[in-house]
Image (cartoon, rainbow, N blue to C red; front, top):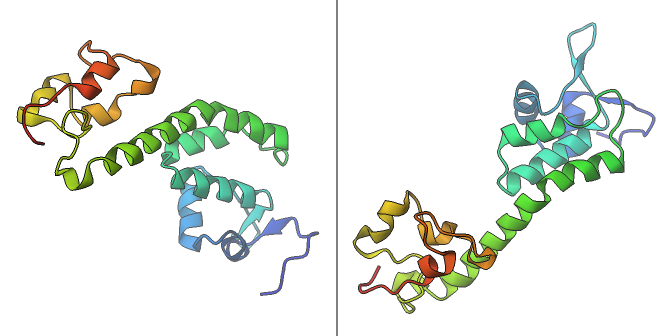
Length: 176
């Protein structure tokens, strides 16, 4: 298919798929979930405005960093439908996620750094291992990887009233 001319204001679902790198079936799914919208021609064919390319790109990137589709849909719903979103519209939308994304980045960096110290949980650093939980001592604090979920760098208390630092560095008597 040749490049679309800039004056074309609407895209078919096939053109949108080709330009966005997303399968037609995924675009239909996105539309069914309210992430994108189209109008129908007299022949009942979908037509998407060109700014749908940016919305699809936003969906792909947001999914890649683990943001659920319902949150993506809610964010996209803040954009104007009567006109193409401006840079200011997109900046306002992205600002709402900045804190959450910063927290995710910090958590991923922490996970990367702490797992490096604990090769295969042999465990080379038992007194500070974020995965250690002998005899399920942390079970009373709730489900999941309690020490990995704690945000030590912010000094927030861990569930159960312990300080985040204490919970994350409590010595363990036994191996993981």
